[in-house]
Length: 147
Image 1 (cartoon, rainbow, N blue to C red):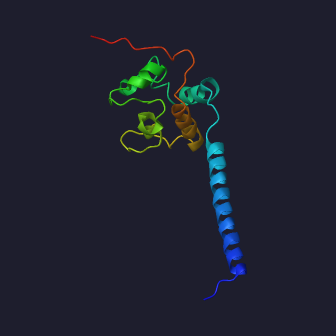
Image 2 (image 1 turned 90 degrees about the vertical axis):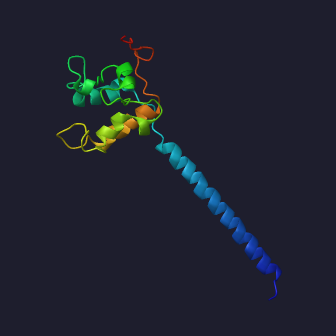
Image 3 (image 1 turned 120 degrees about the vertical axis):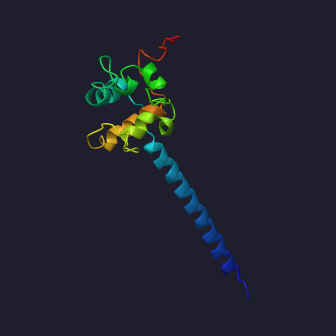
């Protein structure tokens, strides 16, 4: 089979188009991935209302069901009776809070007798944890060790 100059140009053009296609797909993936990254989460306006409405009645200052207190960041880092940290800053996949609000374990789901909280709220919690679970005024607070 003979190759003409035209055949070579077609192949070069197709190869260029293929490379351009790959470049466009990768660029779009990066841009989409970047736009999917959450904007910085504001604890006071986005996270505190979720905790206040859904968590603090049972896991707040007055009552700590299962030994879990969610109104103080240091307690969330420690966790409750489960022995698992409610939040692991930077790692929502290792944060027990996310497991229970997603109802991954039917024996430990929050809220316990209700449907899962809205997915948008779960996403906010995941993004907040991914961004370091920043809680103004509580970032340096440590729990006192009981002896």
